[in-house]
Amino acid sequence: MARVWIFGPDINTDQIVPGRYAPYMLKNEDDLRKYPFVEHRPDFAGGVRPGDLIVAGNNFGCGSSREYAPLALRMVGVGAIIAPLFARIFFRNALNLGIPCFTADLTSDLRDGQEVELDLEQGRIHTDDGRTLQLPPPPAFLREVWAAGGIVPFYRQYGRFPGEAVS
Amino acid sequence: MAQTLSEQILSRAAGRPVTAGEVVTVDVDLVMMHDSLSPSIIRVLHEELGAERVWDPSRVAVVIDHVAPAASVQTAEKQAEVRRWARAQGIVNLFDVGRGISHPVLVEEGLARPGMVIVGSDSHSTAYGCVTAFGTGMGTTDIALAAATGRTWFRVPETVLVRAVGRFRPGVSAKDLALKAARILRADGATYAAVEWHGVEFLSVMERMTLATLSIEVGAKAGLVPPAGLLQAVPEWLHVAPDARYSRVLTIDLAQLEPQVSAPHTVDNVTDLGDLGRVAIDVVYLGTCTNGHYEDMAAAARILRGRRLAPGVRMLVVPASAQALQLAAEDGTLATLLAAGATIGTPGCGACIGRHMGVLAPGEVCLFTGNRNFRGRMGSPEANIYLASPEVAAATALTGYITHPQEVVEVRHVEA
Image (cartoon, rainbow over all chains, first blue to last red; front, side, top):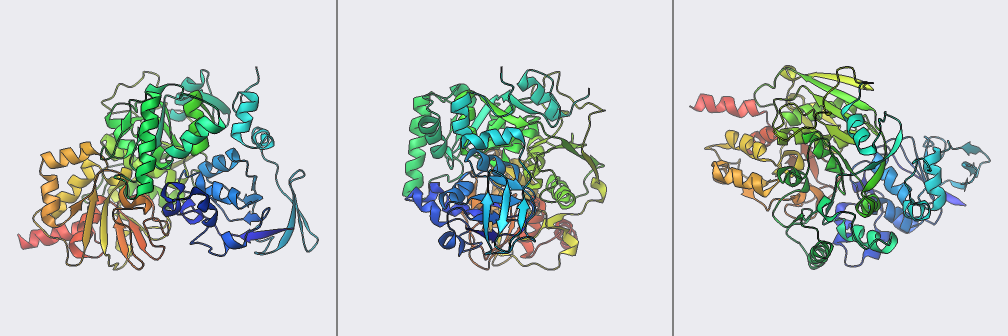
């Protein structure tokens, strides 16, 4: 089972990883795993388990281009992020790193700490109280990057960018 | 069909006519990377993508601005690594400590030009819209891929049009227009879209950069000011088409615009200064790619001339570029700021990212001319950051609380 971590709207990249905790500023870059939500939600980095879901409000990831924000979330094993709208740079960064992002508002359907199961294949969440929530499928050009495991494996495999017509 | 500025630029870069909503692969004209993300970009380029060289060293610019000068042994080491790498790659456009923030520097150097597609490892790369370039921010992996291939992909954005009419009243400037737009659009109002700023052809290039940089704060992919009035050569195909389609149109009457203040902790939490009440501040910080330009220092100096900061107030001025600092030194602006009691930092990003040169303590209140007031942005998460124009910054430095520029100007007339 995965656990749900609920966040509010307009979560910015400074809240995900403050600039002061960038790999650039760290003696040991692996320490980044200790800092997701270090100030915004100090119980997160220590409590999160691989596969857990972030379920957030509108405009998740607004602000900086820092890829180390989603990277820190990947390092602790976040299984997917679900929000009604993602800021575009964060969304690209998460896609590039292979972190599944679903565009949906589930902040009132799920509660913080709730145990759920994510069926990535079907795009469904099964809750511990017996409900099934359907997630909207991402557009095809995003699914193909996802399937490859991120933009680097995608580009190395196909030698082209997502959405580009195959010649 | 009539195209928006973004559609025109992306059509040229894609080699075919493109329309909002399409996913396209385009050639990029310039790739910018800064010290904060370059080490990771270099690693992805070589180790993950397996590229030995960047696609075109003359079209990659490296700028050391985020922690400049280095504040610790590890940032110094990483900067040394970036310098060695740039030399080995034959990248001549390396702009080192003190040259300034990437965005004004690339415009000053003539590297960012009208009609270009420019991708930068910094979210405020929307800045290049000040010269009608399609500038956008990307993370480590996208920038590494663009540097390796000279290409990237985009969903061609819809465009939100912000149309200014009239002229600013005294004490009101480009920052107020941008904050007013953020107040209306909110932080997500232009997500995945571009913003075009019309009716501002009377603004200088760096004043246009104030608008372009703040475009990301409403979520925009790019923020373009039309080319009218630019001294740079403008491609003949690049111009505002009267019947281009916009997803939303805002009209803002500059003659009615009051100084705007963005209160903690989101950029779109904007009010008229007059409705703010009395907010005492500890620090006034004038700087950044949004409002650390020569024009901004000169606007502050006009208000501070012959006067001193209020007791207990600190004022840090961090010029956006060496060229801005040079201009300020030559015409007496710098002397005026120093005589008023302000101090000057090395041109660069300064404390905007909370890493050095003026980090805030818990409980401190900062009046900042920058672009983000997120909790913890400039240091302690217990500090409060208010965003406003350089004119408001100067007036505030004189009184110690957030002050309308006309308030201190009128007092001066009475004294005279």
